[in-house]
Length: 564
Ligand code: ARG
Image 1 (cartoon, rainbow, N blue to C red):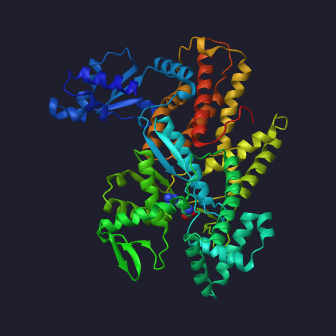
Image 2: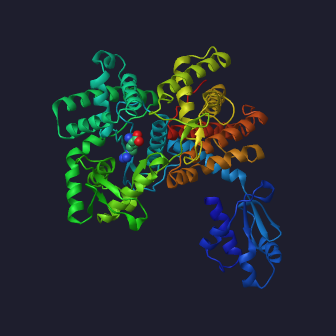
Image 3: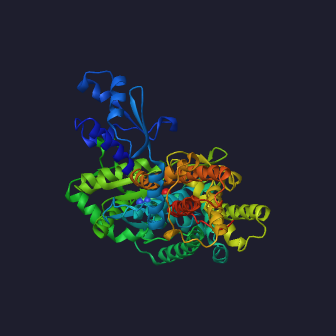
């Protein structure tokens, strides 16, 4: 950034103030290839002013620019190309990183504002799906990124612990359940009942009526229904927490759908007061035609409430509790319509803050191109995925580095990290296919590859022995090989900004892969530990790469072992 400003200032000076700094800044380009310099200024905007062809203007400007701050300034056609002073630039950036360490890239975009993040939010008595995994890891990474940009994220697990499915589950349990069986293996057993219910009710629709009746009882506070529900919830949550522990992710709140039970009457009465509720075939709806949306169903014929009613209560509760600057919902794109309706109803209720609600959507994870669904029972269980990934990592470590100390812990960090990294690698809106072998590979654009690059940098530093880099003279580097790496290091703060503004952790994933590639390329051609005048600067660069890779991984929720 500073360098670009330097370039812009040079143009402003050379044009004797005919253009403003902002104007010039907005025109400066980064050429595709290095032979055209680090920055380029297109002279087209000066053609009218000077009554000359841009090709003529470019060399005249070059004449007027004093070369001190740059390695070289050159006219190529209508462009003025700047080659910035690599040594000065890398001197600056390397010292900055050594100085700030993991704080490098920190910036104040959020001024401390609260941002609730609705994330993970699995459904009680069902296994966590790969979709919930996506929500969990995207949400967690967004929280870290927001923190880095001085927002205050609040991670909320909006558990699916209420709704008609509990009627189904209770009905299924009453029909076929055994307490013994549930105690032994709660999630799988409850899932089995649930899947069985859906198989049977296709031929016995009367079961659906029974299920609805149970949910109604639950909403009315019936003792038996409540006890069963509480039991299912406790067992499920215990299990979910074991997965979160494995992923290294914590929540600030587990206020799920049931938390809003006593907060829904208020929603209904606000809607009534504002004349927004309409009756439609016995049910209560809010018409959303002017938004081009289907009506929002607020209350069913039997008086039971719905998913969206609970979300309305949750939105209002979050606004009152956190006075948020924005409120995020990390939920798959199959719920796009739901969140459009939610925002529209809030808008109708007169809440302008509905504009600060953002549905952070993401695509599906497929397996062999097929959608995964709990109803059909063809799910990949998240715990299996994580365990398999760790096993694969173990195998690879046994081959590559059999003497590694604390192998098991490293395998855990690599295996779990690989799954998280893979999940964050693609633009979140893309669907992607999950293939474990590919995810845990040590080569290619994977988490283990980035972790390995970090570990390699750490090993170079170990080999260098005790060097006090913080007090050494880091003069800077100017060779082509290091330049690629240095430029990318300098780009880290801008990447964080972009990731935060686009709610897109993949910006950081891609960045970490790029930085790893450049570093490995550099390392293949350069002897870092040769004793010469630039050794300290090279080591400073290696230390900076290690620090920035580690911080990138941390922002993604992935550990960076020092050795692997
Ligand atoms: N439990 C829901 C599901 O698994 C996701 C909840 C998302 N959050 C929300 N506030 N609606 O589909």
